[in-house]
Each structure stands twice: as structure tokens, then as C-alpha cells.
Image (tube, rainbow, N blue to C red; front, side):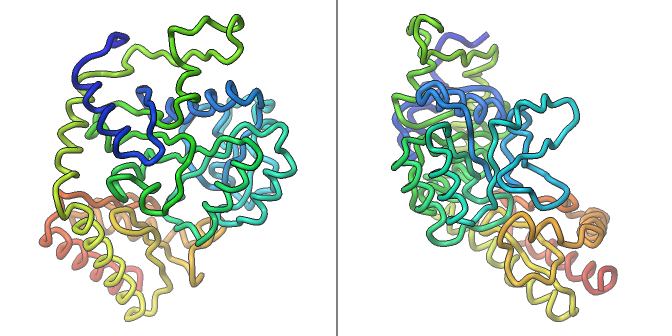
Length: 351
């Protein structure tokens, strides 16, 4: 067990809190699912409210209360949440509201209508491969602040990947809490909740236990604060902190976006490259933009599957209908090879 502190985890905590625009305090857990689940528990404990607002198609892990509205097979009946898995108590869905991503007006109306019972709004800043529209996060920040609702950015994917300060830095909006994973432990199991001190204090083990303290939560875990994962995370962040890192990642992503888009036009194949920088996804769709989950829902999954399989056959791992992640390990030669394989697949298989 790693209940006691260790030097690597202390050093990693200092780096994350310093980098995160929302950073005041931090708590480590083991998985991204844990991080989002505990962040919501903190919000509920501090506000005394139960409901959360999430956005259709966003992914926040596999906790029972978050597998509602993540992957609906058809457009949602807003704001009602549908379960995404068997084995989920239907009552959990009663505390989940769903809104379309990028629809600032609809989200503002839901926050206003449910302000007295809404504990948190949880959102992926880059939802899968969907870029936020200007003003969307600003509206969420304004409305949640107005009504005392906790704004949670799920930065498990975007943290330290989109910028040193994550999506908060890139998109210029600071949440109350942010969750981290993946990058902060260099591929080893670890995750974290970082943000406002009063929210993190709900998990302080020095507090009297619930119900003596009505805002005290349990957020323990055998492998929370694992020093091996922390050492891997420190090594990763040391690389990312080097000059030119994010310029390099975005240059690679911009090149792929530009050239794949041109290939689609040359081959008369309707497609879009979603995301930006080091997080991309190729969607076969006639839509001009990827606005929300529905844009992805109606994209051609059969073509995406064929593209992924054929890319794998050519030595480039592209998980069918999933995102493409770029890293500093990728060289210009790797990008050349990827684009050559993509051109071959689009011309001779998809086209």
C-alpha cells in the first residue's frame, strides 16, 4: 500500500499543481475512472447536491454513475440519460443530465433550471475529437460560477498533451477541478484530481469521518500515490518541459490533418480529420464540421473500420474508429510512412 507519502509522488504533485491553472491542491488515485468519480464525489459533498450535467458522447470512465449518456446508439432525449452498459442500476441515471456538446444555450438553460440540485458539470475539453466552439466553455464557467455549481474538466486525455497547462491553458478557461491520467504517469497506472483547495479538503483523512463531518468523503486506494508510476510520470514531464515540445506535436498533427484532407479531396472521399495537434481522428462523413456527438454517430463506421484494418496491415496502428495519438517518439520518417500508407488505403481500398 502507498498510503504514506514518498519523494517521487511529492515531486510529481508539485509539478502538476504548478502547471495546472486550477491547481491549488492535488490527490492521487489509480485510474482515470477513479479520478472523475472522486471529483464528482467531492463536488457533491461540498455542495450538498446530487445531480451532474454531462455532455452526450463524452467519456469519463467506467464508474456506474458515469456510464449514462456516454455512447448512446441514437441521439439522446435531452436531458434524460440512457445507460451505456448492462448491469447498471437504473436509479443512477436519475442524477445524470445530458446535453449536446458545444450547445452553450442548452447547457445554460439546464444549469439554470436545475441549479438547486446540480452539484457539478463535467466535460472533456476536447470531447473525443470534437473541438469546442468559441464561447462554449466561457458560458459553462459563467453559469456554474453564478449558481455555485462545480465545473470539472476531465483532462485525462488532454492534460499535458495539448499544452503544458493542458486544455485549460489552450482554451483559456479555468475549472474548479481537473482530472488527470495517462501522461502524468508515463503509461503506468496513476491518475489525479487537482483544483480548488476546499474541494480537495473533503478527502483530507485528518477530518472527522462522515457523518460526524457531513462533507468528509472516502477516497482511498491501495495503489494511490504509487512511487513507480510517479517516477515514470516525472520522466515524462521532464521530456515534455523541453523547449519546442508542443510546437513539434502540433506541427505533426497539422501536417497529418492537412495532407489527409487533401487526399480525401483527390480521391473524392468525403472525410474530416477531427481533433487538433497530437489528438486526431479520421471520420468518413459528408458533414462540413464535427459539431457534436451526432456528427460522429452518423459517420461511416464501415469505412473507418476498413481504413484502420488496412493501415494495420501496412504497419501503422490505427484503431478502427478511435483516435490517433502522436508523441515525441514519432519522427518525420514515421509521419512520412503513415501518410504513404494512408494514401495507398484511400486510393486503392476506400476509393
